[in-house]
Each structure stands twice: as structure tokens, then as C-alpha cells.
Image (cartoon, rainbow, N blue to C red):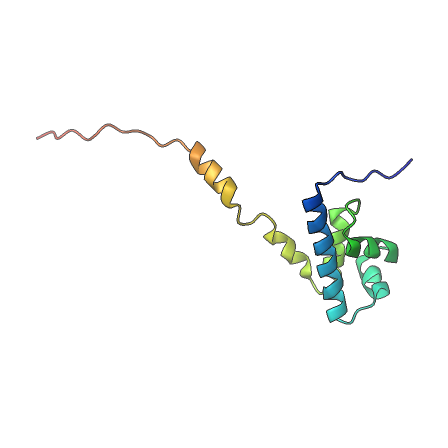
Length: 107
């Protein structure tokens, strides 16, 4: 059975490729070999190579394992969609505020 790959828009594919390139540069700046990072992450060198190319069929868990192997960079995943400006605006538009009648002066 052939491995299925996600169908991505070209812009999303470019983002994955850029992320893979950034992971590769992080590994190289630390002077870590592919073999060592793959071993630390518990994956094969071929999978690490696919991650560094931005292959969409690699699971997010594999990306997280590699980021963790690069000295706990997996915490950076917490930044994904953290500041969701559009979502907050849409949420604010849907919020209902209670309408109150003005207070009566009982003097």
C-alpha cells in the first residue's frame, strides 16, 4: 500500500520547506551530525532528511522529536497559533453583551 501524502497549497509547502531548512541550520549551528540527531530523536536518517526537506508526509511528532533532540527546541511548538489575532476578532464579534435598562432613581 502506497504512503499517502497530504495535499498542500504551494504557500503551505513553502512554509514546510522553510521550517525544514531552519531545523537543518539549527542542527548545523550546533555542529551535530545527522546520525546523532536521528539517534537522539529515535528516527532514521532518512526521516531526518525528509524533515529537513519539509516533506509533508512526516508526522508532527517526528518534527517534535527532532526539535527536542536539538536541545529542547520542541518548546517552540507552543508558539504555533499563540497570537491568533483573526480568531480573537471573530470571537469578539460573536460575544453577546447583556443589555440593561438604566437604573431608576427611587428618591
